[in-house]
Image (spheres, rainbow, N blue to C red):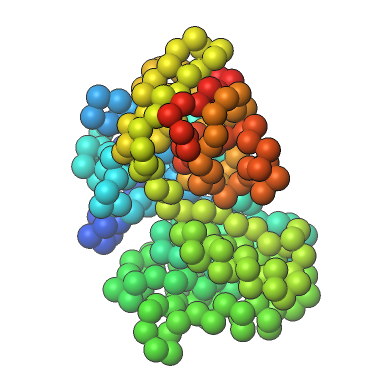
Length: 317
């Protein structure tokens, strides 16, 4: 893991829904924070039970904000990590470490129009998009698929009465018809989707079926992949250590438990930061990043989500 670059203090906590908590964090010494861009995220070190959890969350601030960083975190019922830390342990006045803002999901400046599709908490990167001068100048539409009860939750961060913001939920007449939406977009539109794997895949499949250029389709995955599976041994060749990976923890979590510096970011198998050479053993691939060819060759693994098919893996770590 890259060393932490920021010390942040929790300056506001706001429960905006039973399972959604909004946090504001400012520099401990009151100095200006590094500016963020639309779609930026920050990797936070969050207090756990006997360990530190590292989770990335999108910043919902207007681009260029330097006074504080704002995030919204959904409580995952089965969470043992960042979600539980934010909702159960992090309190007003607490100080945590974080990385500098990074951006793997920026709006594309060459786009003639921006079409955003969000699933639930996947709206968070788009809240900064809507405050970006370039996005507003080009034109946009945001379609949010959420629970009917959460339609008003994100209102404070959405332009009031914006006719280009649409809500969809699971009821007759309110479901999003993805193929129909994509089919009526003008040439030069860039498509962005952020949400759970099922929504992302449905949008990507529809775009591919309609011949959208790959360069105009962008996705970010929200929602952790399943970590469960049979326990196995992981041998870290460079570090000269081994660790037993439990049935309810990820390979990455086990590596971090050893204190080994393993690169990571999204922790959901989407960004590719944690890709690690696999020296021995067969991986059970659960990521959304490696190509079919990469997986077939069996020389790479993404420890944040993938596991062993057998009893042992040897990593070049």
